[in-house]
Image (cartoon, rainbow, N blue to C red; front, side, top):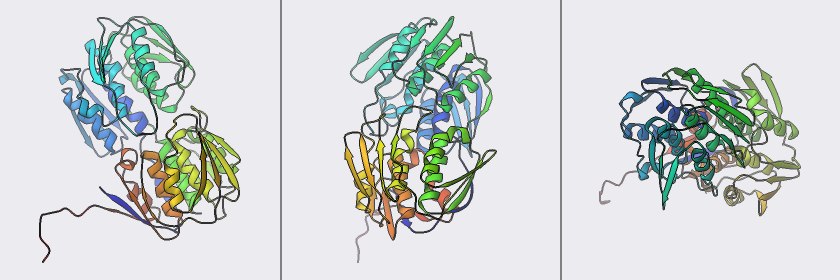
Length: 427
């Protein structure tokens, strides 16, 4: 497995453009199955999760290629609605194909999805929503089969604002007969982006970004070309890294409104933030201040996907902070790794008490999931000495060559690949 080797203590400095959003691109790629023909999606990052999604589309019969940051998919050649178990197990976002395949083919056969081990993430709301639209669903262990001769609009209430369920129901309902109303819907920017993409293909959807989304079903959709929004979590990661290293970085190709909760937290920590159009400048030369209490919650509140990164900043702050995690119960696995680097963090159920220290020290640590890995990279950048981050494949699921991105800002970071064993016997 590859490793990242980081020589810490170098303030980040410079300007960098933010990649397209993984969490917007994945449902959009899945939604391309709703139309027959060639769909072109721009600003798609080169990530493991993206490549898994494209591999699944190819298994379904599509022709798909990823050149630079543009994905071209010919969905006209798709001929089946069965997703192999091996591919489902590699990525949770494969579940996004359930709604589009059911709407297009009248059936879909798949398995419980995989992904990062950050806690229980049931798909009950996905299944309940599709049942409300008229799907008959049978479960055999991890295998799920859905069938519907005709999907029909319905009033659907989500007991929890699940992003995945909201998006899956939206996509299935675009080709359903009549009107579908989703109340209790998730409000994330990625859902708004999916609405804009589907509407560009001829869907009739309003309300994304609020807790009520209305979909008027249409008979068919037409392929289009579309550009994905910038990745707010990648942007947030770079912003925190700039603050943790006491540097100054300007990020372009951002949507500052999507980062308002993080900007608020960073300003509370004493970090300077400047905003001009789509550019955000983050800079500080002082030790951060503790933030009394941060609670993760669905958008527009503070995102769980930035909890571990901000925890690194608070680990270096002057004073004691509290971070409460309300979304995933397994999202404090990075705490033990940060403790190896000198952080003083105590976890009590779903809350972490962070007593700031004056410095972190380099160590060999393991990325246990995508965002934990990003946090450990930030810790390594800010630490004294050398840090080695193992299990980098987790980080590659969400960051397009994170070492190259950070090196452009002056970070001393390289990827170290394992030496292949060619069977030679040392002399």
